[in-house]
Image (tube, rainbow, N blue to C red; front, side, top):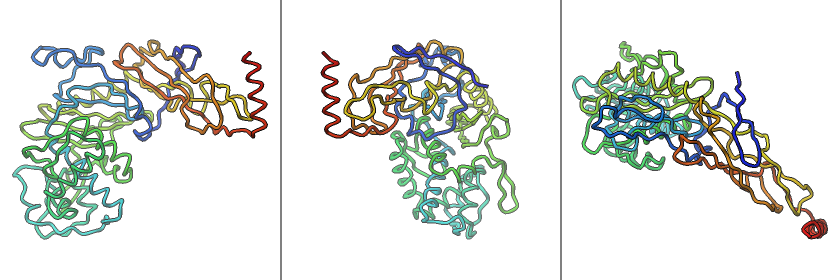
Length: 409
C-alpha cells in the first residue's frame, strides 16, 4: 500500500510518497550528505548505549545501519574507530576470489592443492577440514570460506591466487583502499588475530556493498544455509538467515578479545539495509542485537520520493532553442525519512533563471536542498535537465533574441 505524503517545497509543491525501493548501486546516491543522530553521552555513563534522538539502545561497541539505496545512515556508533575484523575479514578474501573468477584468471573448477601451511591453523578455529595434498575446486573452497568460515580455505585460496598469504594480504589491502576503505590494513586472509590487522565498521560496509554490486552471482553463496565437504555438513553461522527478516548475508566473526560481530544485509519489500555490529559477548547477543536493529530500521524509517521518477519537478524557460520550456528533475528521487516525522522535512528549490541552449540531459541547472530537524546537514539534490535541448539555427536565434529584448523592456 502506498502512503501519499507532502514535502514542503518553497516556490513549488511536490508530492512525496513511500515506494518499494529497488536496490541501486551506491554510486547513484553519492551526493547524499545527511548524517545520523549522534551519540551524545560519554562512554563511562550508564546510558552510553542510547542514541538519544530515537531512544534506541545499542549494546555493540561498534555499530552501523545504512539504507542501501539512499546511503542514509540510520544508526552509527563508533563506526569510524578501528576494530579487529576477525572472520569478517573473509568478506574481502571472498571478494578477491570473486574478482579473479570474474576476470577469468581462475575458474570455479580450478583445482587448488592444499599445502601444509593451509592445514596449520589454530586449534578450535573454524575450518572446512581440508587435508594436506587435497585437490579442491575453487568453488568448493569459496563456499567453505563463506558458509563454514574455513580458515584453512582462506589460506589455501590466498596461496593459490598470490603465492603466499602475506602477498595476498597486501593485495587485499590495496584493493580495499581503492574501494575507499582508508582505515583498513589486512595481515592475513582468515581474520585470525594478528598485530596491525584492523578495519572499521564503515569499511566493512563498503566491502560488503561492493560484493553485492560487483558480483551478484557469487553473492548468493552468502545465503546458503549449509555446506558439506568430506561428508561433514556445517551450518551457516549467520543465524539471521533463518529468522524470516529477509536476510541474505553477509558474514559473522568471533575471537576472544574483540568478541562477536557480524556484517548483515536484509531486504524487505524491495528495500535493503546493511548492518554492522561488533564487540558483543555471545552468539545469542549478536543475533538478538542484529535482529532487533533490523526490525527497528525497517519499521522506523521508510524511503520516500520527492516526485515519481521520470516526472519533471518543474519546467524552466530556455532561450535559443525551438522549444520554449525544458523539463528538469532531481538527479535522484528517493530520501530515507523517519515514518512519523515526514512532515518535518522541508525543501527549497533553487534554479538558474535564464537557461540557454544547447543543453544535454543530465546538465545541472539548480538544486533542491532538503532539511530535517533530525539531520546534522541538509541533503543537496542536483536539479538536472531531463532531455537534450538542441540549439536552434542562427536566424531563429536572432528572432528569439529580439523578442527577448522587447519582452525585457
